[in-house]
Every structure is written in C-alpha cells, then in structure tokens.
Image (cartoon, rainbow, N blue to C red; front, side, top):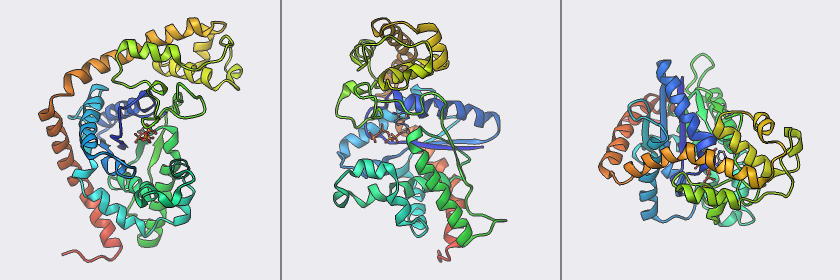
Length: 339
Ligand code: AQP
C-alpha cells in the first residue's frame, strides 16, 4: 500500500480540501502504517506556478499549509511530508512522461477547459501540462492509493493512461516501470460546493471569501458564513430525492453528513421538515466542534518556522531516496544515457 497525494499551497485550505482529501490522507496514513506500507503527502508548489502568483506569498502559504496538514492529523513520523520543489525528480519525471502524454488527452481535461476559459492562447504551458506533472507525482513512488476529491478523478485516469502507454511502449507486462494508481474518493463530500453558488465547487481561488470555510477561520467567522450561505425558502425534505433540484440545500446536508460521519439519509431523518433558520445553527455548531481543535493546533504551529522547515527538509530527503529507483528505471527504459 503506497499512498501518495498533494495539495497546492495556493491559499488557505478550505472545508472542501479537508472533507474531500485531507481527512482521507490521515485515514490512509494510519492504514499504511498498519500494513507496512508508505504514505507520502506533498505541497504541490511546482503546480502552483502554473497560474499567476506572488513568490513571497507562495513561500508563506507553503509553510502555512504544512502547519495545517499537521494540525489536521498528518504525523511527520508516519507520513513523508515534503514540497515538490525540494525533490527535483518530480519535474524530471514529468519531462520523461511528456513524450508519452498526447495533446488530445490534455486537451480533454475539464480543469484545463475551466481554468483557461475562452483565453486558451494566453495560458501558461504549465497549466496545460499540469496533469503530466500530476502523473509524475504519483508514478514516481509507485502509488497504489491516491486520496483526492472528485474533481481530480479525470487527472488520475490520465495518469493511468500515461503509465499504461509508457509500460506498453518502453517496458513489458512482466516487468512494468510504473504501477497503475487507483483514486481513493470519499463517498460523502467528494465535491463540496461554494456557499454562494451550489453549481461551483468550493475553491481557494474563488474571489469571495464568503464562498468557503477556511480551516483557519475562527468560530464566529464560520458561524457567520454558514448563516449567510445561499439557500432556498423550502424546509428540508425527509428524503434525499427531495434535494434533487436544490443544489445549495444538498451541499449543506452533505457537509453536515461528512462532518458528523453519517449519511445524508440520516441527516434528513433527523432534520427533515426543519427550515434553514433551524438547520444552519445546528450545522454551524457541528462545524465549530470539528474544526476548532484543528484551528487551535494550527495557531500553535504556524509560527514555528524552524520546526516547519525541518519537517519539509526531512520529508524531502526521504522522498528523494524513495523516488530514485523509479526515476532511474524510466531513464533506462527510454534509452537515455546517464553517467
Ligand atoms: N470543493 C472540493 N470538494 C472536495 N474536494 C476538493 N478538493 C479541492 N476542492 C474540493 C480536493 O482537495 C485536494 C487538494 O486540491 P488542490 O489544492 O491541489 O487543488 P484544487 O482542486 O485546484 O483546489 P482548489 O481549492 O480549487 O484550489 P485552486 O482554487 O487553487 O485551484 C484535491 O484532492 C482536490 O480534489
């Protein structure tokens, strides 16, 4: 069992990142330890430069993200926690895979289409080839389990296609260079939506801070955001089918279910018939009880620069060692001569 996943230090991590991905990092970290496996979680700082960015903010956000992940329960003695920029093998393997990835495959990626919008010509080449770096990130360590939110499913399928084609073209079925990774997507909360618009996913880059719950928000801010969340005038139905045309109501019920570690059916069995005037305070109370301890740990850790740097340096050294055999095998399979 080799667990690998990453998160971009492009802003403050939010409830969607937590319920869709980070919670599963922690769960799989413990399973990996119990099964003599490995867990590697990285800050995707190389991905972060695919969009316009401020270098000083990227550095600060990278350290904040480490503090957040540790506050959420990632334990650097169990998980290899590092940033991509300290492990050059990620960028090297991306280049080696660029000969295998097809333009048509990348052109079909919905994240590329969404982020580029109508201005494709004006986007960075890094944004277009972003999924190839993602493939390198997981293939480098022979990942078996990749905990991600639903929005990353397509990129992981692409990583499998790249691995399969590379193995077919340059290796053999008996002795493949890469393992085909499987996504690990939560059943509830695989895609948490914006609090302002139930058709858009909650995102760090949304210009409205009211659209997301940041893991660093204090209790009052969280309660305010839940109170102001967009809803409709109807009371909650008693069955999930009743949420079909109500994306904002479905989102709040899903958030409640994921935080309470129960199902949407159970939430509606308990709260069906309630209006949002009743349901929102209950949701805010639950959210604060789950997220406040994370925020408290984050506040303790965030200014301990020495500890955060040490975590990243140690993790990077382990990751460099771990990735070497696969990188060597990829160079060799391609017939590239190295020293
Ligand atoms: N709304 C979401 N619901 C569930 N899971 C989510 N993830 C992101 N948003 C949601 C999952 O969080 C992990 C880390 O994501 P990321 O930061 O690497 O990239 P992202 O998907 O691009 O996240 P954002 O917040 O939308 O960032 P920006 O705005 O910078 O692009 C991934 O596993 C992702 O699935």
